[in-house]
Length: 175
Length: 254
Image (tube, rainbow over all chains, first blue to last red; front, side, top):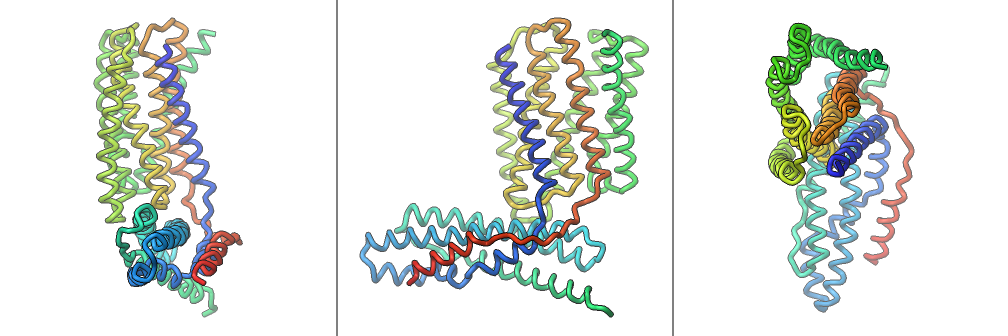
């Protein structure tokens, strides 16, 4: 009977977890302003500098090995904070894009599909970059690759969002 | 007391299937069968299964060792296979638009299914108990393994889609949630059925799967009727964290 009780316990926990996920799904806000604020706060150039292989090569050549490792670790952690923020922005983009897909305006619905798809890809490359930065923090002597795809995808996503702004303004203007 | 039990037993057996007719009709009316042909088939199959079992029960009685028991096992096997089909269909619908994620999801799903299958087999080997009723115990033994796999797959779907920020459409989420609740109730039910049971416990447990099924059908219906999320509300969210990171970074770069 004790084994049965363990299974019942697991089943109850799972049912509660499913109910919690359902409640969270209905509470998730779709705040595009939140994504925009986060975007405005991100200094992409500073982030680009942090993961620039040329910068890294310069630091490697001009600093003693021990100091270089310390600096590389700190740079990796700082870059990781940026990637986390980007990842969060991607999540907001995705929610916004998915909601926009239900728009009665076919242009907005199509744009929503593109925003959602781009955001999911941005989240994917952000998670990939997080893994690489963690590796860089753990093993600073390994050479670092610039996450080009992350920057490219971010630029594409922000471009789509700008298009949404333009479309919305055009819709609101009296004809 | 006995009358109430019988009433509840029949209510929980009949009512979900009547509601399932509404679900099946909504799937047809909204043309959702084009995206979810297996779920539509599952809904109609469950209704047909119910009619067949009810007819058999009325003619031969609820004798588990007789014709009813054999029909029950065969229809349950088909229903279980269809449920796996529905879960596969949900996965396809959720991930197919996202090429890279789709490929990753397929690989991770394969490994997750393999892992869950291994867990189910190990549970079956190490936790077999005494049996009170041969057929019921055998069904429960297989049912427990199936419930473990299905629960795990639904959990994987929810967690994986959240990780990549994939918002499940209202009814897709509802279908998956219904199967999640149904599988967890069946896990508890099948685990309790393996072992010696008193008559009162057996009677109480008879209500569990149909009760869980009732909840699942209500969820499917609710999420089908509920409108899709369209809330695009602006909000003023503090961006202190990111500003702080920027400041820290500027300090570091000086």
